[in-house]
Amino acid sequence: MLTVGKREQEKGAIVAIVMVGLMALLGMAALTVDVGLLALAAQQAQDVADAAALGAALEVPDYTSGRTVALSLVDANNESYAGLQAACSSAKGDILFWGPHETIPDYGLLDSSTYGVRVSVHIPVDYMFAPVLGLTGTTVTRSSTCVRRRAGAAPIAPMWMSYEPPLDPLLDYGVEREMLMASDPSAADIPGSFGWLEPLSGGQDFLELLRGYDLTPEQVEANLVAEGDVVTAYTGLSVGQWRGALDYSNDGLSRLERATDPEGPWANDTFDNFQSDNPRIILVPMVEYLGGTGSGAEFLIHDFAAFWIESINSQNPPYSITGRFIKYQLPGTGTDALSEKVWAVRMVK
Image (cartoon, rainbow, N blue to C red; front, side):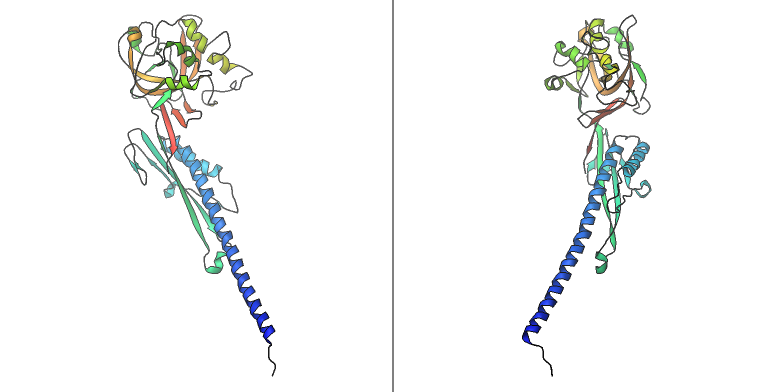
């Protein structure tokens, strides 16, 4: 009878142990690949959901437009990594909207000027190695929630426009308004006002604020106004003073001179297709005339407007400044204005 020696037995045991170890290592490596695939899918789904929710939030309260923008952004950002494809369907409740006084689950009750949107994105994942354990795949879902509300304060040009409710932020888009004479019959009772406001920091900053060029942080901070504030008229201005800020100046820095420079960056901008730093864009408070005359005239701020300065006549009477309501994103602040409203959009979940 042949027998196996002790050395051969030891060799066989070592080989068995090595094989078991290799199988365990290979299994762990295989599962690591699938776990990595899940992580990749989760990150892709979150990125796509974030982009879609932010885009949709900029469109509310127009839910139809918001839904269209969300779906288009899902498609635009749906680059395939490792064969992963994101899916989002408004028919399946992947795009949800909430309005004032409604409650967003896991967030809370919205106030009278706030809207919300939540976009959910799904990515099916087929496992590569886990099927040996009986696991074929799963679907990764990620959601993003954004809210859009009116901003509490804004740096403004020291000009006022009459608040005439109800102003519809959708219907008033692109509407031209005469800005110089305050567009209100009561302007006749405010001698010398012509729609100008006294800056909170004093008259010495009026032209710089109206021109909006190279303002210091201190000037901006000192002249922030909010809904509910009461402001006063600024009187005694000559045509030459506001012309130098808006229409023509000896240094070439008036708003229209900079905006229409054929060699400048804004030469081809229009009111519905512009760069956010175009000098034609002016933020103006929408106010209710409370009473008083001259520099004693008082105004209650109800809202803000983003205007595109369309044309100016500062040469011959009757003088005029014409502007259009626009949709506007305030650079660097996360704040935007939709027609007569100034809004803040932020991601909350």
